[in-house]
Amino acid sequence: MLGLLHFAVALGVILPLLPGVHPRMASSRAGPASRSGLEPPGLLGLNYGIQTPAVALGAHLLYGTVLGLLLQAR
Image (cartoon, one colour):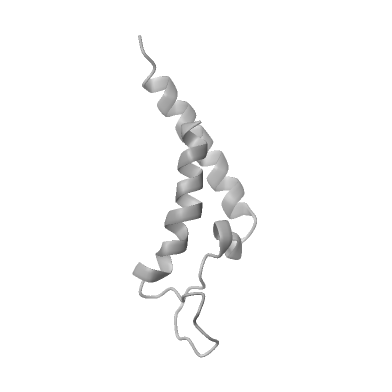
């Protein structure tokens, strides 16, 4: 459960904010004349390929599982 929440926050909240703080990443409002080197991530990072949300989901589920096992009450 924690992994799904972390996934949702990472790709739904933090990733869209990245163009605002990364100087080489174009914003979604930048036109074709933009000199930025990186394109904006788009919804759930889909501009970087379908593998981005798939791998991120798997990694966050693994993270949540491991964290849950390590923090389990004894």
